[in-house]
Length: 64
Image 1 (tube, one colour):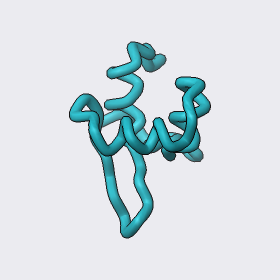
Image 2 (tube, one colour):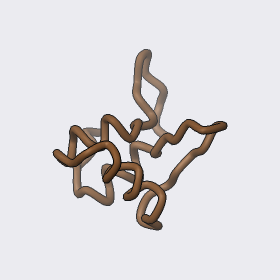
Image 3 (cartoon, one colour):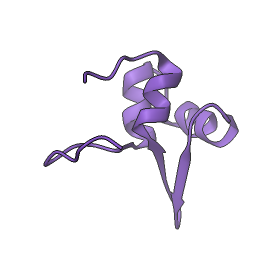
Image 4 (cartoon, helix red, strand yellow):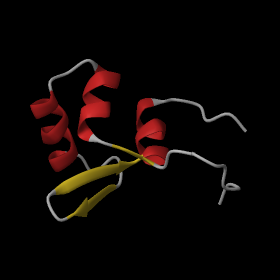
């Protein structure tokens, strides 16, 4: 696991995914509910997407 950095982000919200992909929030929720390509965490009614798995799916390179 990478060394922890203060303020480092580990998850995305569906709203953030909608902004990254330039899609509606509803489409982002549908993507989260139907995709097996990245890891989802559900806490009550909240949905969070693991940043590393989403970035890998999207093809974003994480700086070392």
